[in-house]
Length: 307
Image (cartoon, rainbow, N blue to C red):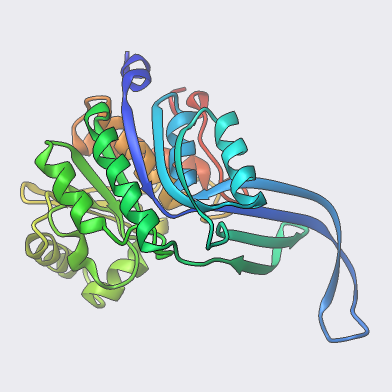
């Protein structure tokens, strides 16, 4: 029954997309040029990252994902588009001739990350303005909007998007970045992780103190709810109606990169399928427990979540 509702659920994801590249190899010696390991690359992989990974998670669970973003007119952008086509994500990409598509290159040996190299640049104002027009056009066709902020400049108009979507009666979920949360004012829900929330609200010693800080932030930003993901401590939902806590479902933590993408993707998908927030939160918590046992940016399959 739930899976049928999920298949009809339509979620638009807007934000910073990137291409995650993985180079896997072996290290058997130290370089004679400098005291660094020499990695002999045996295998390479490419995966959709950032907001693209959010959309990919939605599609993997059987939902209808619409991804709106800016990429460069380059090889990395074309590779990202091909990956998402394979993953059955509906892409609405604006190509900026003046930027490179964001790429995160990771070098790994024996499942350990040796190095990460980032290539990134911010999109132009003109391209972002054109993206805003597409946002307005797509809005009537979706149930939920997810704004995935990775601080790469793709959500410069985030406040306007929230206002437009809320005026249209849409649920708006935001995965925030940085410490300027005022720009997310009026969203339905924010999903900061523990360190991100601490950066904005300050430290706490007890759960009561955490709840007090969370409620103050929720009220000051006019949010319906605030969901703080707390790693091994699970996740906690703060609403006017009270606090809901879910302990972690993870049995083995291999890699937490991309776990936040899975949380907000599953949450948005379940809300679009008609579930209430606490129940949607429970499903997203289960999905996070599955994905952290996988290497790198990964997705949860329906048989892993609904079994």
